[in-house]
Length: 229
Image (tube, rainbow, N blue to C red):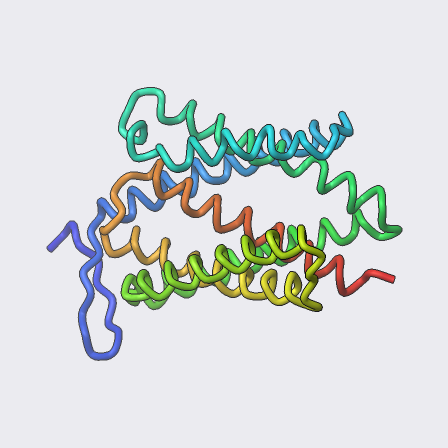
């Protein structure tokens, strides 16, 4: 059929519709624009040198937007909501960038390394899914379980810190787990688009953006720890 593309994997022919490729193209186009916008907002927040509480002032409303995105994803204002969300997420990085760049001799280089590694992981994960066209949506349950375990561990560690309980290496281990987890989420979310399970490019953009955001933050944490004198 003229409107289908085929891929052979494990002796199984997978049909990928043109509509899936259209969603993928729209997603990547919107994702690239939001990443540039987010970077600009992060740079502005860094230049203004806001107090640490500024991170939460941006992060909390951004999370509210993300959790309600299914309600506005098909509305005419969806694009504006996406740029509002990614702008807030980018701005929330301002205090952290100030701490890294201003507090470490090679802080700027660490940020660039984190960006490069994040981009590398994204291209490798996307390239793998687009080349093999394997259906990786079966990983959904496993990844959500892993996300809940990591999130629960972070909350437990945060509560324990109030009682003076510090587990050596826990934060480092959680950051490493997040890097692995969100790398796999990149595979999963891209496969969702290719297989036609995700048909809304706005929702797909937000999902991929969150993966990249979390990858960058946790890679920066790991690199900062490795270079901490």
